[in-house]
Amino acid sequence: MQEKGKISIHTENIFPIIKKFLYSDHEIFLRELVSNSVDATQKIKRLASLGEYSGDLGDPRVEVSVNKKKKTITIEDGGIGMTAEEIKKYINQIAFSGATEFMEKFKDAGDAKEIIGKFGLGFYSAFMVAGKVEIDSLSYQDGSEPAKWICDGSTEFEIKAGKRKKRGTTITLHINEDSEEFLEESRIQNVLDKYAKFLPVEVQFGQKDESVEDGEDKEGKKKWKTVKVDNIINNTAPIWTKSPSELTDEDYLSFYKELYPMTEDPLFWIHLNVDFPFELTGILYFPKVKNDFEMQRNKIQLYSRQVFITDEVKDVVPEFLMLLHGIIDSPDIPLNVSRSYLQSDGNVKKINSYITKKVADKLGDLFKKERESYESKWDDIGLFVKYGMLSEEKFYDKAKDFGLVKNTEGKFFTLDEYAKHIETNQTDKDGNKIWLYSSEPAKQDSFIATAVDKGYDVLVFDTPIDSHFINHMETKLEKTQIKRVDADNVDKLIDKDEKRELVLSEEDKTSLQGVFEKSIGNPTYKVSIEPLAPTDAPVTVTMPEFMRRMKEMQATGGGGGFNMFGAMPDSYDVSVNGNHALADKIIKAKTDKTKEKVAKQAFDLALLSQGLLDGKDLTDFIKRSTEILSK
Image 1: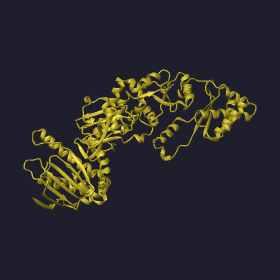
Image 2: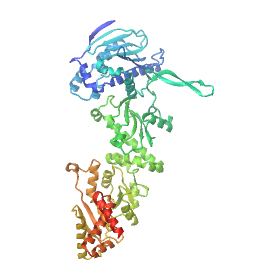
Image 3: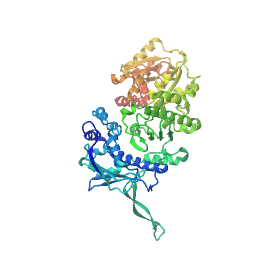
Image 4: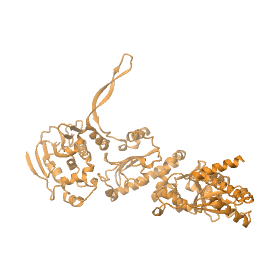
């Protein structure tokens, strides 16, 4: 048996195009060839289980080997094998069935992952690294003759009688000069670790050293010796392929450590398992979120039938869950993932929606059954929940029942619970429920204390996403306003139309305002004299609520388009308590210098309470305070 011919394509040589477009992704040749060998091995097992093959299965595994001297890489399996006719059919014809369309559609393409696999070109990724490829195969069918296929990267091929004695296929790649990095064992080991770690058939790459017990010494202590054992790359039955009923918490935690060896234990996990209207399995873990969110991203790995595809899962997993860790496995996602293809794929959108629902159901279940435990984890999971409520309407509809807010005393409430909690005491003259909050409790302690003294409750919103979350909640919650506790005097924040008289005459009021304006000497601070309670602070410095929100949202990548105008200018309101004893003291001071000195001291104290006093102003304040204390 010997035959030479040309691969039937009606266009220019396709191999240089494969090499050109796939060069940046050329390590995937090993994924494609090993996956093909695994498929062939699974097919022979399936035929044996159906009684259609009665021969000896042996111990079918895929073996990868490197011969540095001959400059070859070999992938060998004991699978179903091919006859000469099948090689011609599957390698020469089917693999190029879409060649013309491929050439037209992708001649200008830039995304390698979109090309490989889309037209059955997986096998031909071998030519990214090899100048010549040989297939040596023996079919499982009775009476089959071994066949050998040789191709040098052109459209010409040769088929002749092979020498293989055992059922299966050997693919030999003669590595070209610019790909000799793949002749290094460490390089192959790394690629196999990446793509073949959980393949369902054992993949062997040479041997490795292992320590085993070797009796005991004279003192009765165990002795060890080093032996050579087969280097099996993969765990053929990872836990996501099993039923949750078979698994313990320890199994889930051990698998997490296998995936992320240097990471703290996760908070909890979700086992995904659905077979209609699409196939999807996997495990998603909720990690303890660190402050550096970007370091936590891209930890979800996408597989297709246990073959690693990518950790770029942006379109498969909703954006708000990108901080989760774990594995998703679905044969209904295109094997070779490209972002542009994913977005247009119907199954991807269905899977995205399913994951959102599954996560919402899990969180809702935890909240109902283990509320105390759920609350203890809120500082870590709150970020996911708030982001989801912001970005996914369907998630919001579910999460409004298990999304929590926490007050400065550490008590948790659902949105409905909190609305009822503050309804009586924190409703203003217009019927709006006012939610007070602190973004930095330590810095805003005096404002919190004032609010609490008046019987008000203060929430803590101190995560990077909270400025956006607050705005979103105001659009969702009926007749509700959310105000930062230091945004103004608390009686103004919750305006109950309780009128207070100013004890100062109109002349004293004008004089006091002039003293403060002169002592401050900065037009960005707008001074007003207010009729507040005598026990309230003498001077309060605040930034108008709208402006402060815009600045906060700018800082976290939002701001309703205001970023195009650059940084917003600072502007502050200075409320002077006209009913405080200090106001009277300033008015009655004997000299203008004394008046301005006391006013400046009171203003600087207000700045200090807001963390706005620094540099020379802080130095001057300390010096002035020392002088006052020394008198």
